[in-house]
Structure formats: C-alpha cells, structure tokens
Image 1 (cartoon, rainbow, N blue to C red):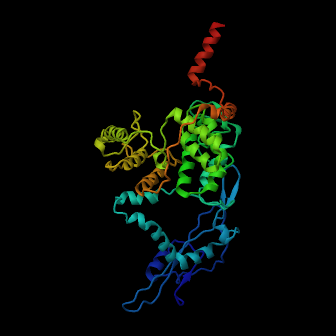
Image 2: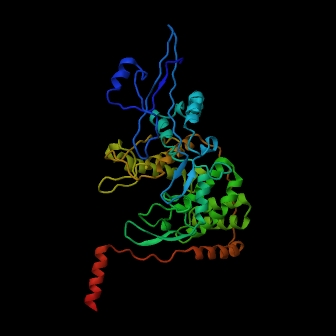
Image 3: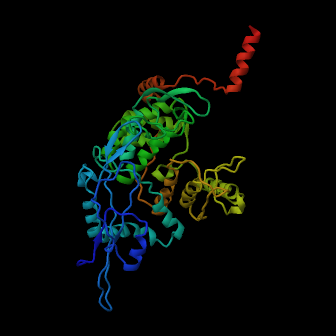
Length: 443
C-alpha cells in the first residue's frame, strides 16, 4: 500500500476516534510511549486502517486478517493437549503473525474448497433452504486435538469403543437422588467422553446413572455396523470387535437388541461361532433393528407406514396444529425433545410415498439439553436422501441350539461377570427422615 498503511500498538481511545474519522487513518495520532507487554487478565484493544489510491473504473481489495495463537487446550482436570494446528505452526504460542499471513494469502482458496464441499447439498433441489443451511449448523466442531493420529476417520467411535473396556470405580453423586455410584463400569457404553478429563474420566453427565440405561449399548453396536457399511473399513471393525462383544454381553442383563448387527460384525471379523450364536439369539428374539444399516427388515412396510402415519397425526399435527414440529412426549410444563422430528423424518423418507416435511422447536420457542449430540440426527436425513448403496443381505439359515451351546456357556459367563448388583431403592430426603422417625418410634 506504499506508505499509506499505519500501525499503532499502544494508545488511548479518548479523543482519538475523532481524528481517525477526520483523516481516515491513525497516522495523525501522536504517541511517545514505548510499547510494553500487556498485563495478565487485562483487557486490550487494537485497531488498523489501510488506504490506497484506486484508479478510475478499477477495483481493489484490501484483505484484513485477525488471528490468535492459543496452542494449548486446558481441561479442568489438569490435562492439557496441543491443538491440531500446532502440527503446522509449532507450540510456542508465537505463530499468530504466520497464521494471519497464511490466511491473507490462502483465504480465497479456503473459501473455494468450503463452497465445493457444501455445493452438492446447497444445490440439491429436493432440500428446502432451511434444511440445507441447518446441516452445516449442526457440525458441532469444537476442539481438534493433536494427540495420536487416528488411522482413519471414525475416531469418535474408536474413543467410545475404548471406553467400553474401561472401569472407573471412583464415586460420583447423582443429582436426581444423591446416590453415590461408580463413574463407569466395565462393559457399559458411556454417556459421553467427559469434560474435566476427556477420554480418561468419562460420563460428565451425572443426573442419572447411565450405566443402567438400556439404549446406549445397542446403539453403539448399530453405529459401529453403520460405519462399517458406510466406509467398508474392515480394519475398523477388527479393532473395535472386542468392545462390541463386551457391550453385547453387558446388555444381556437388560435386553436382546442389536443381535443381527452383532452377528454380521462377527462374520466380518471371521468369528463363526459368535456369528452363529448372535444369529440364533436374533431368530429367537425378533427385535427391531436399524433399517438404515441395510439389515433385513422385521416389520412389514404396510405396518411401518401405518405406524408413522399415527405418529405424524398425533405427535405432529396435534401439537400447535402441526406448526411446532414433532415431539416424542411432553411434560406438563411444555418441555419436549424437539430433535425427535429429525428422526421421524428419517424413517418417513425410507417409506415410499411418505414425504411429509417437518420442522420444529418446542412450543415455547426454547431449547434444552446442552452438550448433547441429538442435533446430529439431521445428518441421518441426508443419509436417507442420498440412498447409499447398502450391502445385500442374504437370508441366513436357522441355527440349531445344539451347535451354539458351547459358545452360549462362554457368553453367559461373561455376561454374568458384567452384571450390575441389584439397584438400591432411591429415597428422597423427606422419605429418609420419615423412615428414620418411624424406626425410632418402633424401637
């Protein structure tokens, strides 16, 4: 910009802004103070202007770049991790200028790459404008650490697979009844990877004891199978198979879900005994599984359509005349899980001729459940719309009980060892005082 640029790194705002407004730059500011480092925790400000001569009928662009270098992610538990960008800019915290320099030179290329990535979705004529935009609002990217490199994508599933095999006997207090429970038991899929010390202290959620929830383990198995279908990554399923098996054994005390997916995963890793055993249990249980994974449906399409019609009429149309979206239930105060409408839409898209569009918040225009991943269900809608090529599932023959007896004994022993002790009945404060008083009176 040939002498018209001006930088001032220490000045007071009082009285100076009128000079900038009058002259269009900061070069008329007078400062005799020497630059010094700012004090810790102090508030600082910065300003920059640029000027240039623009010929007639010409266009010039001035690019500004704001960058900061915070190389370390700190967690309340005391652990620190370097952020991923430090792999390219170093960890000394002095790379802000280099980051800004690269941003000025490369921002056009970055924008082109982002636009190319988003273009197929944004230009999809089947999608309403609000849906295409919402996809990219629900990426939920926060921090990318620079710890050990994952062999491929699916690193989140690998983290949860590793957590299944963890056991943390440290006690945490449940908010809903005050009981002390182990933070995470062996075999249970955690609710989350943690906040204070991610990956090592899981289950930051402490309202209820999620080790007793019946949905997390089968969902984990189904998600693993979904990712295998989507990526064809056999090394991934081989790496997480021990966690899948243990998760199934732990789940045996509650329910019999995810057996078909577990059988298929066992086939992919070459464990014939486990494949036959889970298939045998599936044939006996006849539970419902994820159609999105390409597994054989167990509900007639006519029944599925009638069920979805019933949900559409009651859970959508009867809530604010269908203008507030689908809900899976409602408390007396009007609280709902608004993300349910994404899931209902996914199932609707799978049924031919059932294309009812949904959109929703709760009835009071409020949101709830911070730190949740439910909004990512919207990407299941894109999965259903993109009609991915799913592996052909050939019907399997029935398995005789005698052929799985030995494996059943081993699996049952693992399940027995993972079984939780009987849950103590939770008592509120008033109930505890009442029981104590009655005991004193009677004795």
